[in-house]
Every structure is written in structure tokens, then in C-alpha cells.
Length: 292
Image 1 (tube, one colour):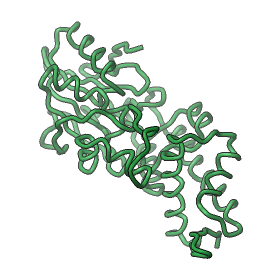
Image 2 (cartoon, rainbow, N blue to C red):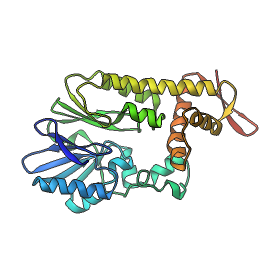
Image 3 (cartoon, helix red, strand yellow):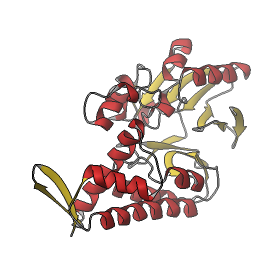
Image 4 (spheres, one colour):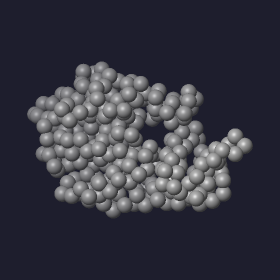
């Protein structure tokens, strides 16, 4: 764990729960793609960077989930590095309480003040092409979050953030977090069409071909959509939809899962309604959903 693995002349990744990218800018300076899930990860990253005689110049965050920005504050305090975050995502990095607030839909209970949902705040700047090192470009990857991005380096390596989940993760969690289902599907189709590069997803094995895994993730979104449509064959409220989904996958509901999966299911309902496959109605002061 936290082993530095080289994949091209200047590109590396750090093997940890959410893979962290490292790009060597010159003989003495490096930048990171994300920073892990908490302060302790930041300490391990600094130790690794120091051991190689490098200086951390910048962190480029793919999105503002806690397991990707958790080391930001520590590393910035220790090194003075710049931190760049995609627009919209940057507000969540600066004001982390926005994350559990937006997921829960109100003032979040203490159970949602976890390190994943409530990272430590950091001083960030909006990510633009102009702030990137030579040879690095932004690859838009919306769907998992509003404005998640990946990074393509020298037309050889692509850091894919959270747009792909390994088969074992899909099997374990079944319903992975999404904000925009059709945007996510389009992202996966785009990624599947990229050729001649080496891919570094944060939550799946690295590979020179991710087309099969991308299709597996697309298939999972369609499976969940079909389950929701079947559940909604008669008018039903959101809480009962969520319960039936969790029961069908033998999952156990917790506050964190309620926030994460609940938000995701609402995104599915919106998509299916926009597609004309679900109707929404108010009966007895309850919002009910029904398959059309």
C-alpha cells in the first residue's frame, strides 16, 4: 500500500484505496492528481515525495469527494503547493459542509460528518487549461459528480478519477454514486473509445483497454434503471423505492448510504422522468412515482 508505481517516463500512480496520480514536472518538482482521503494520507504522500528528493508544486483534484481531497489541507500547509479544482467542485473543496448538506438535502446529522463526506477545507483555485503543466490536458468526465475531470498526459497516460468501478466493487455496493446518469453513460462511452493509452482509474485496475469495464458499468446503470421501473409499476413514494432497492440487493441502510444512494436514486428518478418512462404525482400530500 502507498507504493509508487511508474507507468511512463514521467507518470506514476500511488497504489492506495483511491489511486493517486503523480507527474514529474522536472528533476526536482512534481504534481499530484488528488490527495487521498485524510491527513494521514497527506503525511504518507509527503514522506514519499521527500524520499525521492522532490518538491510538491501543485495538486490537481479530479473532483471534491473526501477520498480525493482529504490530504489537501495538510499538504498545502506543509509545502505551500497550489491546489486546483474543477469549477463547481471547487466550492465543495473550500466549504466541505456543502457535500453532506447537498446529499442530505438539509442540515446534515452528525452521522454524515465523516471524513469521506466532510473533508478538511483547503484554499483552492478553479482548474483551467492555463494552470496545467505542459503536456497535460483536461478530460471532462461528468456524471459521477457535476464536473469531475480526468487528465491526459503526453497522449500516453489517462488518469480516470472515479468514472469506472471494478467488477468486485459493483458486486459489493451495487448502486454507485452518480449525480447525472445519462452524462455518466456518455462519459463511459467516450472513455471506452480512447485508444493507444494507459488508463489509471481510481477504483479499478490499471489497463491499456477499459472498454469491457466501461460497458460493465453502463450495464449496471441500466440494470438499476430497470429495477426502479419494475418497483414503480404501481404508485410508490421515494422511501419505499429506496427500501425495495436495498432489499433486492441485500444491502443494509445506514445514514451514509441513505445520503449517497438516496441522492443517486433521486438522480435516476429524474432521468427516467425526463425520458418519459416515469410519471410523478402528488396524492394525499405524498410525491408518488409510477411507470408510464
